[in-house]
Length: 206
Image (cartoon, rainbow, N blue to C red; front, top):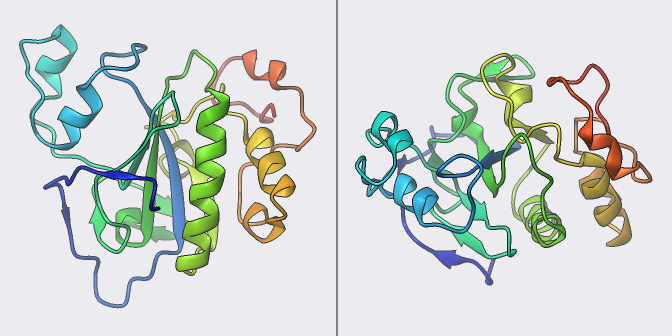
């Protein structure tokens, strides 16, 4: 997207030959956990995380991970890896019987966690980004990290409203993009239902 700030991550490589972008994976991340607005996520994705800055960082600073996009609470959009390349965001994962989801997916990180709602600005930017990605690539599905790595990952978590995302896409007239979202979520769902636990939910709220 033209509105994205590009901060290149070294944690990427070429996609396998013939691997088109078929999937978009939505994640959530906050560093330190449940704290927003700092430089931790950018530092992690660019291998600059200081293990002495926070106790949590001591265990993760050596990780070599990335995502294509990061959407801050303010709606600021940062691109770490061009979507044509493979970012290292999904880990051990399976989608529709296909393993190694990094090979054929785009990863979008939202600044957030499993215990707090996301901001309206994040949904707006996310909807626009999904619109653009579906125009540029043969995307077949849009799903959450927890759906491709069940039991290992929980993000984007129970406070992420798939219903709200669906509603925004419907308002933009993008029923074609909306149809590619796999997790359930009625466009008219009450976002207050997102307070239900435990996760994963048997029936998703919103």
